[in-house]
Image (cartoon, rainbow over all chains, first blue to last red; front, side, top):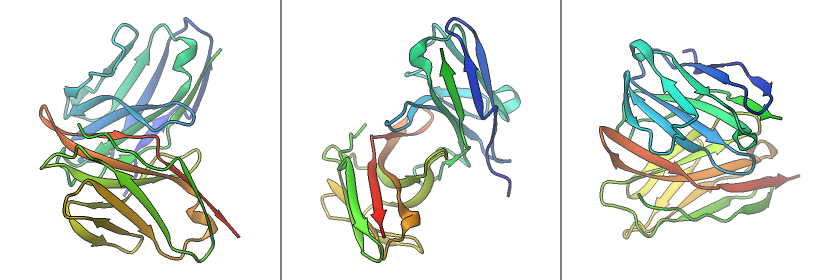
Length: 115
Length: 112
């Protein structure tokens, strides 16, 4: 089966610019996650969707980050305006459901560099 | 949600068994313990999950004592390709679903 797709794989922007990342989860997976992984750290959950509804966005910096999952399938994560500290890998993951036994499948990530 | 503590790094040699212990003193009754593996420039990959006692699959074993305040991931006969970061997660319910938190992970370096 096809895995989680993300694009672009790499992005370089200057601070105060905007950027958007796209994620296409595994077909049939109801739950979609966006994580931010700063170099040397574990992934930090930014937002979790169940179908097209937000389950958890407690760690999403809402003044600059936004995410949507239209029609409960693919999703976009946007940063506007970007700051230097936003340099990180942004990982998208999906799972069949949101039960403890549901495995999260991760995409390859988008590496963002903010100059 | 329960916080996890793991060693920052470990070294091993090819062919050895590696045991990585994770401490999760505040684990809740309905929390599961899950381990992921992450190679450089890739997203994490599920290794194993358990609730109590012992779980084994084709990749690893997971040992969970009765009090569930810790767990140990056991990798039998590691090879160079097992060099990666290993994350222990403890997941519990959140509104509408289930939430997991990644810690800093354990960097395993396997030498020839």
